[in-house]
Length: 83
Image (tube, rainbow, N blue to C red; front, side, top):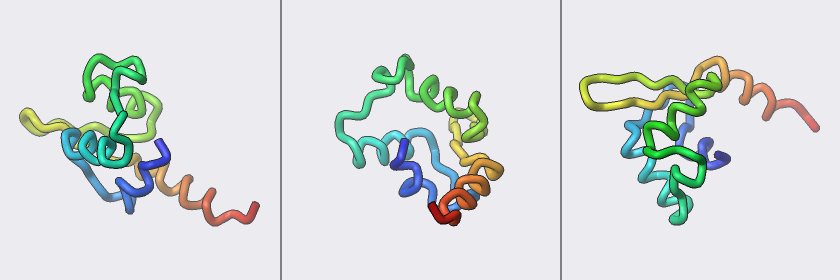
């Protein structure tokens, strides 16, 4: 999911799952959660949540996808290191 850096400019950014799917489709019109073994987009979003990359927050029928702040800090440090 390299497109994530465009979707989440900061660790505090949040996306509703529907908006996130729309963004993924704009970046790659062939995107389908089924290609990743998920039967729905929520199932797809749960996989990185289980790995600790994102947090899912439910409010009523809405699901917000938020980048895990610990992951964002680690990723930012990795980008700053010279290779």
